[in-house]
Each structure stands twice: as structure tokens, then as C-alpha cells.
Length: 341
Ligand code: M6R
Image (tube, rainbow, N blue to C red; front, side, top):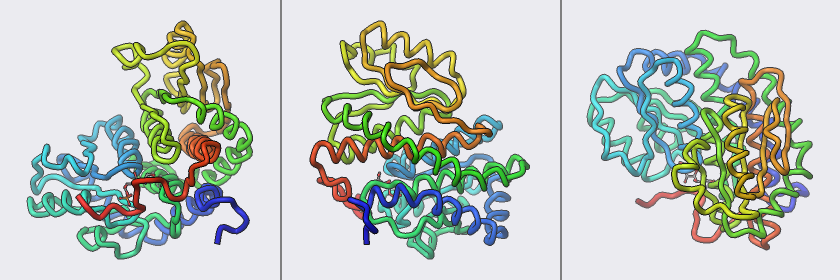
């Protein structure tokens, strides 16, 4: 049941604190599997991360974290798997909420046949993808009914950050605070609703981010496309001047995602957009970008920034869809699980 919420999507966004917490404690109880996964990742020459849609954005975030540590990580959109040839020295990390996505299955079969070691992260115990894997890891978000992935994405981020912290040899207990960070962001629901309702009246929008913010800009734009049917595109903020800015005119909405790193660079990008009279928005952590409208979130530990920003991008999409009269739980043309190629 929707437990008093207007839609499953809204209910599931509000379940994120619990989902993230259960995910971390689940991984701690499966710590032997986690250690096996880490051993495989550390011993392989290349790490190939495969996933689709929202799960791909979680994978991209993980890839950036590891690339910054000098790991050879290649994020691959599952349906584009033919562009890479793997071998026994590679490890594969397959990320899928449902654990059944056809594109991921096909890629996995090919990589497995090449002798690569497979690790999976799915939200369904013994899912088809988990059964194809050498090591099965799980998010524990619970069933997700809304077609738009929300609490499962936040849980994937938590699980991947847990893995990353262990790989780095860091203490992971800061992740226990993720649920409080999400809860504090959910207090900004009214502000997110206002932004969502403004976007619902537009026909285009850009979502811009730099560094670790980019996967969240991509996720924000995907959510808007998926349930609002508004044409939203994500770009690396620095790329926007290499073409996309040509579209920007008075009141064109540009949403900046700012996880609290590379802030000076992002502020320059805001100025470029303001110079074209764009309507600028920001979802910022700890430091402002000074956009026309800005939600400023604060975290003590910037490693928790993703948990501050994620509920806001989801709520913006939710309220923009509702304002347009769309059913966010059942967007047109989409199925919860894509089992065809
Ligand atoms: O079940 P999966 O995580 O493998 O699904 C992948 C995508 O189909 C999925 O994330 C899709 O992009 C979502 N509906 C986005 O909200």
C-alpha cells in the first residue's frame, strides 16, 4: 500500500533512509562476500562496470571514485558491451536493481565466456544476474514499485561507497550517518516542489555537474525525462560551452548539481549561463553557487554529499511530473524491468 502517500514514488523516496541503512548493515553481515569482491577487483588489471539507466549512473559514480585512486576502471553502458573485449585478467561489476535487465544479462554472458570474474550488485536475492556471478552482493532497499528508481539508486550509491571505503582502507562508519543526511534533505521537500513545478512549465532543461556531481546531474535529467516527459539533458558543466550553450536564451532552465567540489569552476559556469539570461538553479552542498534559486544542504563529511543531493533531484522530478498531470508511478512507454533487447 502507498501508506498515505499519493504515489509509490513519493513513498519510496521517503523510504530511502531505511533502505540505505539496511543496505549497509546487510553488507556488513555479508562481509565475507564483500571481501571476496574487493579481492577480485584489486587483483584484476581492469574493472569493467556494466549497468543500464539509473544503475549506470551509480556505476559511473563508483568508476570516478576508483579512477581517482588510480584504478583502471571502464564504465560501460550494458547495451554497448560489444565495444569492449574482456579477458581473464578483467573483473566485471554488474549493477542492476531488478537483477533481470536483458542488456546487462547479455553483456555478462559475453564477458563470462571470456573468462572474466563477475561481481553483481542487485536488489533481488538470487536474481538472474546474481546467479551468473562469482560474487553476489545486494542492496536491501526492499521492493520498488514505482518505475522510476529512487530508493534503490540511493542504496546502490551507499553500497558502492561502502566498497570504495573498504578498498581505500578507510573507516566506513561515516556511512551510518547517511540516513540522517537523507532525512535532513527530505525537509526541503517544499523547496524541491517549487523548482519541480517551475520546470514542469518548460520544454527543455540542462542539468550540469562537474567531477563527482556529473552522475547525479545525469540521474536528475533522466528522472525528468522519464516521468515529466520534459527534454532534460545532462552535461559536464565545462562541456556546455562547447556546443550546448547555443540553445540557451532568456529563461532557459539550467540546474546545477554541486556536491561541494570544484565549486569555483561551477560558479564560472553559472556566470556563463547568467550572461545568457538563463534561469539558473542549484542543488548545492556546503557552498553556494549563487544561482537564481538554490537549495543549500549541509553535511559534516563531504563523502555524504550524494545522500544530500539525491532525494532533492528525485523530488524535483516527482513534483514536476505531478504538476503536468502525469502518473509518476507508471510513465508511458516504460516498464519497471526491461527484459528485452
Ligand atoms: O533493474 P535495473 O537497475 O537493471 O534497470 C536499469 C534501468 O532500466 C532502470 O534504471 C531505468 O533507467 C529506471 N526506470 C530509471 O528510473
